[in-house]
Length: 109
Image 1 (cartoon, rainbow, N blue to C red):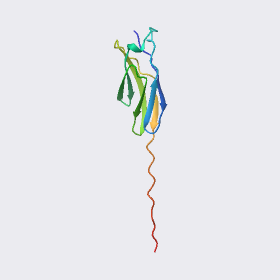
Image 2: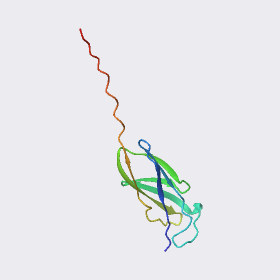
Image 3: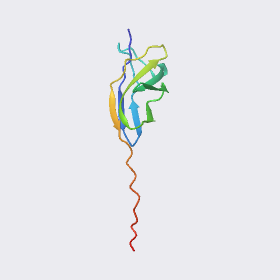
Image 4: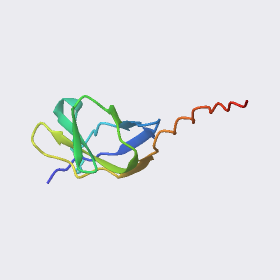
């Protein structure tokens, strides 16, 4: 049985946007060659939410609410085969900083 091999990388975690980057697989698990023309789509799965991208895309930027996340990636070939999930990337999105308190004016008479 042929399987696709895939690795997911987390590039940066600015504020609430998270950049993901991955390398397109070049072969099946049995070393049979695989071209980008053979790739139908990628699915980025984070906490049960799936983001789907065309097979020619190898990066995305998604916005996440503050919290802890773990994500994996799968790829589906045009022949219908889907890879096992990639390595897990975990990250935390910190809440935005609180705005400064408004100045208080003290009036003395």
